[in-house]
Length: 393
Image (cartoon, rainbow, N blue to C red; front, side, top):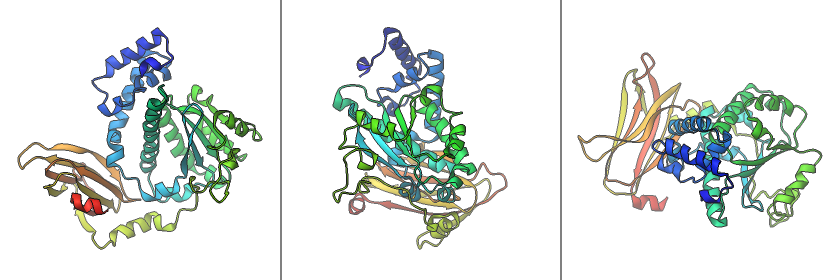
């Protein structure tokens, strides 16, 4: 696929050298993305030292969030899935993915009451990883390297209270910095539409962390001019009618609500105090108080391959370290399946699952050994499903 890139011999040399220098540190999962070394080289204008530093930073970032296993080991909180209104519309005329996000009606103030900054970060990373996976499939389909997406951000009904909220600025400045540092050359262009006058307050903060080369790819709609130009890049039957295309729902609805998720208020059911109450009163939940310096192991002996191990847990306050290990037998060396990491579940329960492809001993660990003084109150439930039970789910 690299031969299909439009690069000079000098640029190809930088790409090859970047690969040679980092190949032992890049995971097999990362190597599935054939555009990897090209994207990081191009993002740093083919300056080898800068490209290597950027890629090594990305490698560390991926390890910190276990990104290689995000499709199998990560279950996003329900409230995020339902209330981050972003939808794939299809593909443009070149084969690049087209995505629409209803920013204006997203209940960010409600989300701030339910989830942590890390919760949102990991979900945003999941979205980007899905784009990379989709564009890899598109590249094979079209026989050329396709890496980028067209993003449409709609700020219709964006509230002043949201625009001026400190978490809007703090969180999204953080996310934009992470996006530009870790996912270079994925944006074809972004079209920002229906912005109110006070959107400038947010933009003045956001653009401080966005590289100039990315800012050049961001278009602000001027009286519908940019919106009309979408049809130059995207077929009319792909673009919803309210965006200037011809696509509607079967009943003629131009908003295409069967394919587009729109923002709506987050129910109080998801708010922090209610989330804790919901898990703590669940009939099958268990409660432990883990003293400072101690850990709790939950052991499952798996006899059938393809069994499914599920877990859900929440701390009353603060965070807890969580990990999953595997041993072939008693006395054998444990293998780390889910790397140990601090997880703040004081706002929303952490849910996860792991498909057990080997027979043996699986160990869930809650670890409070790094705390010198603070005990942790933990509510949790776990279960092991046999392959037959999985089929019935």
